[in-house]
Image (cartoon, rainbow, N blue to C red; front, side, top):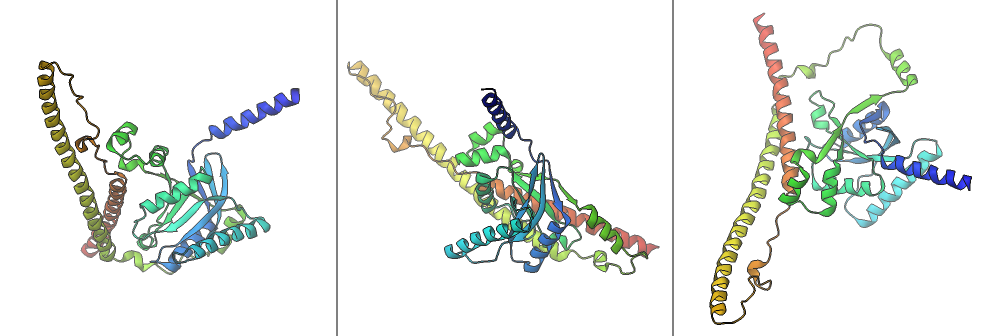
Length: 339
């Protein structure tokens, strides 16, 4: 009896621990995994590629210790099945050589930060069915060419996932949850770490003399191609947002027209009931579900507008950062010329 009680209390304790698991605060990535992601994405750029993240889930830290790329394929059911078999075979091989084979998410490349799409959310929800604490690592080779390591870890917010499961993105629910467009994704800080052996080896590889070669690409004053592509994508997003706003304007016009028709019908029905009451007849009901004017008009989903607004904010931040660096270089060159 004592053993059964102890076993039951242990299971209850484990269940409570699982329920109150702390949220992921940091994504700790091995340097080798980061280099693999960068190499895979740059080799196939500008094509978009994806891969699997492997590691450990330790408290509030999600460790990414290894990764492997997914084979590039066209949309076909047989090829998708081959891709799933490839993932299982790769994880089996890694397990045989004593390498972490626990899936903690996936990585994907992007072009100028255009990753906030409905497909990304669907992939997140599919992963969430089996892995509650997973992340997506986004790498942007085009931004990295500007001298920035464009690597970020994302996850969906809990409030957004709850609304997505209910498939209810109308204005009332969004106001009730106090969910704005900035609350769709949560960015988690990334910490790159290496083992002591790798750090010692890298120290041995460092030359004793100072670096003689210079990366002159950092001194380029022109950032026109990067700015032009960002502005082109920004204009496309603004057109998409305008189309979404037109949908809502059309919905509200129909809604106000329907409300006016309902008020007119109710006034007519009340007048008719007054006549019937004066004649000693029973009044008619003031609502008629069979009447088409009482059929509710479905409100368009605000998910697309939220994603487009997120994307516009991302493009604006990239343009702001690139223009700031460009002005700094120009002021620096101006000072050098004056001297």
